[in-house]
Amino acid sequence: MNELINKQHTDEFKHTRYGLLGNVSDNGCGAIAAYNILNFEGIETSFDEVVKGIGKRFGMVIGLGKLGTNLISLMLYLAKYFVLRIRFLFLKRGRAMTNCSSVLIFYYWRSKKRIGAHYISAHRCEDGLFDVYNYAFRPIHVDLTEFISGMREKHEYPIWLVGIVKRKGKGR
Image (tube, rainbow, N blue to C red; front, side, top):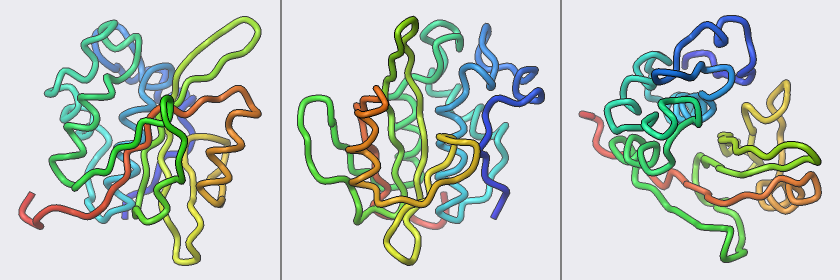
């Protein structure tokens, strides 16, 4: 398995283009989440290939990359490899997708002066808990349902969960 990405804000990513106007450090969390999920699931690929694949599906068309990754394009990209289960948490609360092997979480956050959105990825471990990447400075090992519930206390509001149910045919 390739090394997973847990730290988005690096000097290297500040100089890595994302769309026409963005860079990975500021705007590439969707591609990082997709890259991590592919690697969690045993599909070895390079980060550049993931960015190209999302770009082919107009993933950075909104804001020319400056506003990050289009969620629909990201789901279409992942659907090339996996059967997905999608839950819209903004309207409906429900138990998290603990039976999925990996989960992409899209949430928005707010502070007194700013608002933003972010993608993170989580992978289910043998003990049933999940390792969450690109959320903190190191992977965190959590119960997914409790983690999602606790996000609201930090002014982070999960909107979409995209769960990986199973991998499609090996020939992809």
